[in-house]
Image (cartoon, rainbow, N blue to C red; front, top):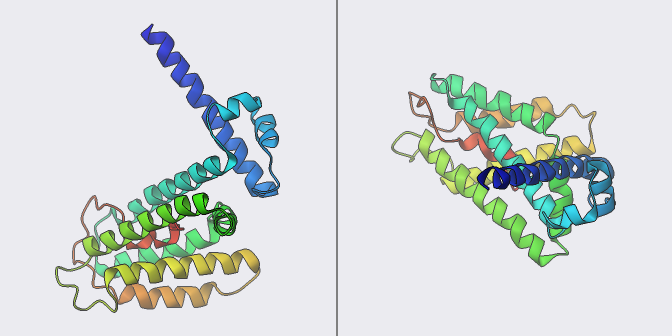
Length: 222
């Protein structure tokens, strides 16, 4: 009996993973609104029944895709601070990776569409705002982790600095989405360098820190 239950659980997980993959591809290619449940299940090789046995709606599936994007970005960004280094080295790593994220973040169009959907759907809006609140709180907490014991030299309180960095990264991503041939990268790097250099890092970056204030670029709100 135990083996049968595990086998069923694995099959269910495989079904969900294939639905996730198909939905992500369809949403990015056609857009959320233009993609039907039939499109998703056809691409995944399942029926509508398989879809609704795993998700209540397209909106729920989109929310889970966004949550996965946040988690993946967090995992990537944590690696930035796994190596010890000077404050200058930490700053350089943050800037380099933020620039890479706003250039290469494939799922950002899903966030843009999600924000527009949230304006017309109060339930989905609350889910999306929940993700964003969670991200901002995490970023603020990690700013404190990476600072010297006294934060008197901060240009802004940690929560305000987190919001500033998140907004900057989202704005850069939106600009690049609308104007892919833009040469704004150098200007963006200059602004990031100014913000990053104003943060008084600890002299010794811990070996296995939690995440880091650089996670701003993943926040939609993450």
